[in-house]
Image: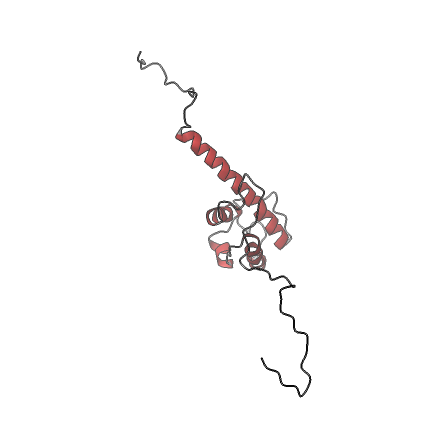
Length: 153
């Protein structure tokens, strides 16, 4: 039995079928948006901590100057961002390329590993680059040379 031109195509899903491309794309974009929302909130927290300015209700498309971040605060922000995300962003990048919250979210979303700040888990900062040596393993020097003693290094 054929379909006449006036009848619409069947749009009901059939049991046992795989998702269509549109359904898969929708699920992926939802996960991406969730990560971007997490990144946006984390960036707002970092900016508030570094600058003392409240940006919780700020428009994410406003540039940093409109939010009240001057050159000194942007300089301080670069070190806070490096500590929080383990990816350095320079003052120049914040001034020119990533001059709004949304642009900075896009940068970190593109450059952070997929598992960091994933929407399905608790936000985790990027792993630190340097390891900390416990004090129990640090070398201990028990004696201080006295005047007249020879020190061999």
